[in-house]
Amino acid sequence: MPTPPDTVFAVDAVLFDSDGVLVDSEPSVVRAWTALARRYGLDPDGVLAVVHGRRAADTIKELLPADVVAEATAYINRIELDDASRTAAIPGAGPLLRSMPAGRWAVVTSGVRPLAVARLRAAGLPLPDVVVTSEDIARGKPAPDAYLRAAERLGVEPGRALVVEDSGSGIQAGRAAGVAAVLGVGERAAAYRPDAVVPDLTAVWWSGSAGSGGSAGSAGSAGSARSAGAIVVAGACRG
Image (cartoon, rainbow, N blue to C red; front, side, top):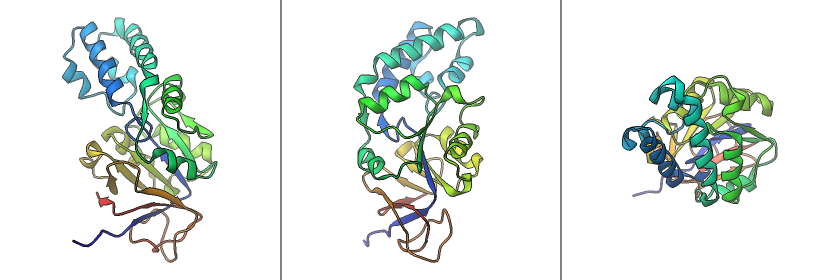
């Protein structure tokens, strides 16, 4: 079978989700939310089915009575932060981020800032100039607010940015923000039809140029677009 052609996203900036995209926090998420479920008499499997890609406070508001939301939110934030040192990087995340020019990328996460920073540092990943977290926005994913805020802080139009996501809520948020394209990471992402899907970031890299003749955000064969920069994906599965 022939090797699929490289996919090129010609964009001015890349907006990365963190958990499941840059860092493998899944074991920590399972431990923390299972503990919360047991503490408040909830079904752990049911809780884990709805937490991915969303702000903890938003999830807890749906699961628990109003009079315990603040307490439960503080609890989950505390135990996730206590567990952050065990976070590992998603394969390929380090080389990709270190190749990104300053001011051309951001981290956009549903987590609180202390947790987001702690997980990135534990995974040995660099921090960008722009990190948008749950405290920075009025509405969490799947609303577009976080991605719109990140694009604004980078000084780029949303339509000139690529979102890299693993969750349904995050992919919906990127689409709602009007970004050029969404690159999905992992099996969970594939169900939500991003423009392309990769298992991790080992086959993804930043290129300072991208051929000639295409338009911003186009996904096609390598050499089909020209831009100040591009994300290239080797043999990506198209969404």
